[in-house]
Length: 485
Image 1 (cartoon, rainbow, N blue to C red):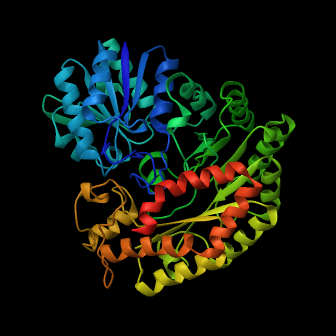
Image 2: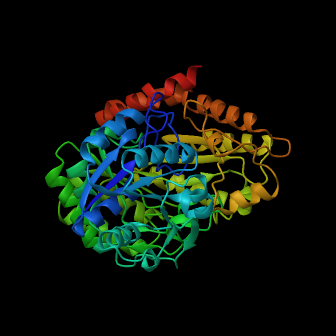
């Protein structure tokens, strides 16, 4: 039986829509994330013996008609279509699903992702063409749903789905989170078979790169973060160090052009002993000489671990700093202090690690004054790179409930991005409009990246490291139109 996995087209005329960003959009830096959650689910079905097809339309990017042409050629006899979704693109995603139904009326259509996980009934109510949605972590849900279709068994036996039957909606009990992550096939194996790493780009990484997850879930309780609250929960479940390093070995043997591995875990460094174990294995096997790697790392990371990571090939860490106002950090349950932030950046410089800092405006308590505080500290910290974004409160998060309760959200799902697919703000806070927040982020980027001292720093870094120069030039090519307009 054939299962066709699709990352649908969206605003292809403007660029590559990165659906599995934590804030899906066509990014100003040109970044395009791998559709990793869709990849893992497809790999599980492939392992289970299903015939699998895979289309990542934004990677090319293909528009709707180009995507349908490919699916018509390859999708004959497809029994199940599985479509990735996002909040900004949900209506477009469902419109594409309707076109699939017209072309393949006998096939079933399932939606996956954060949006249908948070709003399963609402999502199914948009169109009768959707047969089911998977809620939360969907690797085994999709597999079990495909088995039910193949075996002509009752859908009610499949955990984790909300489905349509005779015009009525039904929800089964939740699928338990996957505990034994070593059982999930390597993302890299699937990428080797179906995708081209050169289609993807992540500005802080050397090009081309491959992204993987070494764990799922996040122990932190940040009120805005969509994946822990809608997909994977707050328990950090881990692959073993041996399994993680085995995937590094696979990449080394099968991707001669790949220069970097990106750990996409929300907080790769939560378990210090495991990080050290992975680093030791990378060093023992000589893989630290083959790859650079980077990871998301909370600001409680200590200097000793940073130095071990550097020794093992890590070159950059990504903290979510969000705000430089302590009250706002407390309001959003970030669980960090400004003192930790400054020590973290100082320690990273001691360890020889670069830092890509993430800042966000528009959280509970934000004012024009607190936004300026954030920019001033960002300039003082002077990390290698930085990003400034307005808060996008996604359905299923505490931040969304807060914004809805206070009537701060002005617009619908399509307004999460602008007409050109770039990130937008739809929050109107007391004394702070959405336009002002977007304008501030644009201003902050210009202020940060157009400093003469920063430009000289990037040039000097590029002279010392040609790969750094390449990734900087590639990112600058994409972002320059936003910096200079």
